[in-house]
Length: 376
Image (cartoon, rainbow, N blue to C red):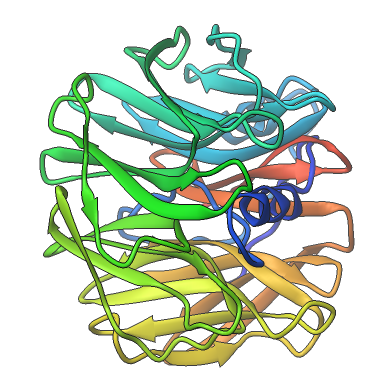
């Protein structure tokens, strides 16, 4: 896949989220990737030309990358009906924040006064749902709702917990994360709703000592992965009904740090970092059932994969190769890699936006950032 970066001003988020999830578990954990879109219209991403003739009007893509400049990072993105919503944190003290794009420009949304960060965004019915947590200072998770992405209200606050992701599928929406005790030991948890307003706690098997970091909707229900104690294989769950999650025995090694999971046709794709601290590399693992995984190391350089998305039936993964911001794409059984920035930038979430292309959010040099990769 050949795409050309369209820069805006922002900051590396994956490392921040990595530290936050570590705080929520008894062991090392992976960066959270936030919310990813499923599939795009026909046409794989093609080079986006950033230069415009003198006097030409700005394009929609220009407007998407023209974010309000702010210190912080973005973890999650959702799009629909001409609106794009991105969430994360602002400022050095971590204040939860959301930005909304109305088809013309971005604005800072009106949100509850909540320390911490937004980690996932999805929609069910006419409600857009955002989830997050008060980490690193406050142990509670939160669920917000909005009709337009610009004004948000608190639906639920969950004490002694953190929420890391949210996904909607087949008439139900799921928010997932972990219960946290006073020593920050984690027990995986999930909440679900059929209308976005009323939420119930789900049953999660083999939850003690684990956390759910990323969830995806599948053709049969939902799947999730996360973290557990060192020396134990990474956890993996499946749910045919959002109310009950089954732990799946798998061959994912204890040195894999998952960051994002997406459904890719009848397969699952898991992205993250492999190896021990100081010797980690970006990886992708593919599985038909969540039990047997075929792993690919994307680079021998130090780095990690932070977000994944399916674009026109092609798997696209963002991450860091050395210090370089990189997109990998799987085509005809082979991985292609394209480098966009040499250092100081990271992507935390990807989504497809009609009439724009593949849109990414994250951070650059400590500030919010977006990128656009145009499609046919």
